[in-house]
Amino acid sequence: MIPLLGLLAGIVLGIVLEPSIPQILQPYLPIAIVAAMDALFGAFRAYLEGTFTDRVFAVSFISNVLIAAVIVYVGDQIGVGSQLATAVVVVLGIRIFTNAAAIRRALFHA
Amino acid sequence: MDLLNQIIRHPIDPDYALVTARGNESANRRWPLAVLALIIGSLFAVAALQTTRAAPALQVERTELINRVQNAERAQDELQGRVASLSQEIATLRAAALGDDDAARALEERIDALDPVVGNVPVSGPGVLIVVDDSPSATADARDRVLDIDLQMLANGLWEAGAEAVSINGHRLSSLTAIRSAGDAITVDYRSLARPYRVEAIGDVRALQARFVESSAGAWWNDLAQNRRMRYEISDVKQLDLAADPGMVLRHAGKATS
Image (cartoon, rainbow over all chains, first blue to last red; front, side):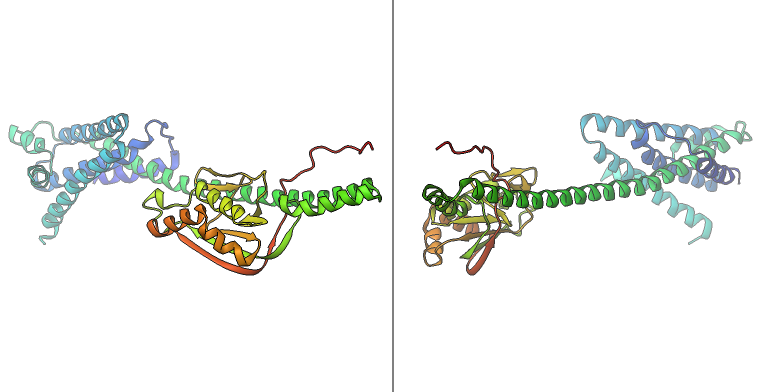
């Protein structure tokens, strides 16, 4: 319940406050969001399996976002930024789908 | 595909299982979770806001650019109209200045004979129309596009074949009009052309087409049409109307001292 409320509150906060992201960080925002979604789905699945720990969630979320951003940043420096961004999205996307399928099975037994 | 298998088999962070196996430790702290959820939610909102905000801004920029182009084109048309009326004025002034003696009449005759050839006055008459265009595969291979040199060859071939007046897409060619590439477009007289290219030439219809086809320019274009599949259509036309070249301006004028 708390994470869901926090998520909603965050969305409202973002819309109301409209914090401006620095120009340098803007390309990494979509990647950070995909990494965050991956962490969220992973956490929810762990929660359903009874292994959820908030510390692991915090660490995995932060490290996921940072690593994804660093990969894209390095890619930008060596000229393959968009390809590496695609790679990150593909890998995290596969994870998200797999986790979502597991969550669906756990919730609906289908 | 070991990598893909690994991604699919272990989609959750393995640390969840590790920490749970190690034993429970203060599972009651909920505030980091709430803070992280807050951060993730605001990330979503900010990204969505930025994307939706950027779209209309781009659209506005685009319409403004289009407006500016259209305004510039209108201004250009206006200026061209002014050029036409001013050259008319020059012609009347010249006629007045020349007076009405034998030498003047001879000069006027020479002017009248030369004017159509140099492109100073609009001309009409029978001639040939050549339509050329990029080949259908031009987007894939830049070599399949019509280049400035192709149009230059075409124009020179027409002159060589005896054309008296040539225009490309309505831009009359004179000794002062350049045919060259600028960016992606070919420009004639520094104005960009839109495809397809219509080259009109006034001349002796009985000979013009045949002589053009035999010239080196004809061979050049035959080669382009056959090997590069460019469009290349040549036909006789009974009546062509070519405008004057607005780039022909009076640069120097003085009273004759005879």
